[in-house]
Image (cartoon, rainbow, N blue to C red; front, side, top):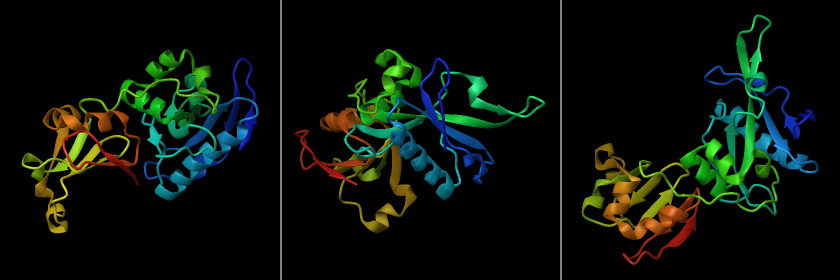
Amino acid sequence: MVEKRPAGGPITVMTSGASLMPTDSGERVELAVEVLDGQQGAARVALGIVCDDMATNRRVPPVGAPWRNSEPFLTGTRISAIMVTPSRWGASFDDVRADDGAVIGHVRTLRMLTDAEAGFASTKGWDALVAEAGSVDALLDVTRDDAASSPGLAGNAPVFLSKLHAEHPPRWITFTGSDLQSVTGLESEEYMNDSANHEVWSVDSFVARFPWVAAFVREAKSGQTGLFTDASGAYVLEDD
């Protein structure tokens, strides 16, 4: 890893060699993280997480789709998510070009976010998060409080559930970070193994049918499962 201090910008810690890792898509990327001076260790942790994923799963991190963990990955902070976004410098930094001008790779900038910020960005986008925070620099300090409140899942986000929900209420609902998965508790293993017994609803449709789950849908963090025993709206969290 290398550390750069560009004029007019924050300290940037970058990989040097991540683009050599084979990926199924064939994409070649290096990674960069902007941090405050003294927080370079946090940047190295984030880079390590993404590099490990690239090496294990042979994929590059998607742009604009936060990776969310159920717990902070930096001790003593609220930082639990990583999101790839365009850099503050634009294409001159983000694109790696050959001598003839052809794009041969990319530099992906990683943003370290709290879960609430990741939820906000997942629903409304990176630019909206920056506007809500006040500036991109307001999202640098890893010891910060939430710079935005999570609006919950978008109404058109998918809910994967069994067809038993036509007759029975949900008992366990899991938020994966991008969608919901719900079971009634009456499904057998054989039933669940048959794809014909599953369907997809929207979050709006799910909450309209079972309004008492709205608080969980709004408040849940990635990886959490809510156990419902009645229609009161009360639930018990079961972290995966």
